[in-house]
Image 1: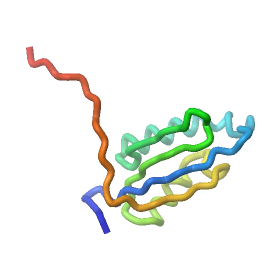
Image 2: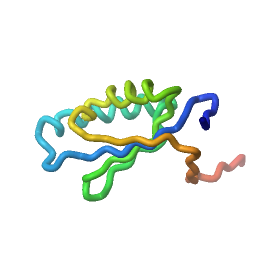
Image 3: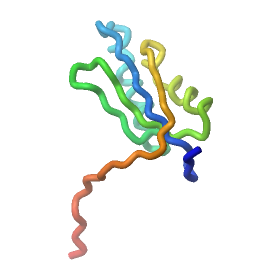
Image 4: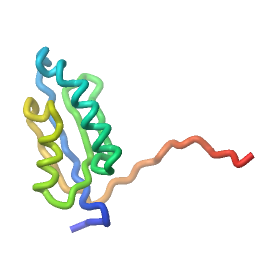
Length: 103
């Protein structure tokens, strides 16, 4: 099982309901707050929405599948979406950070 000191990475694919109801729209601000907290706590690595708003992808870091499911349950909109997840062997990305000047 690939694991680092933070935990295992899981790719989660959510199916966004169509049409999006007003009830879901009203939960978006709370969803953003939780997503930011998950990023800050190192539990969320990637959070991406398809241009057509049909799919949402996220990479979570969790110590187990049960922790992953608890993290997903913290998302206010998760109960409105079907999802599937897979444990990742690895995930690579390029961080685009501005060059630092020491002058």
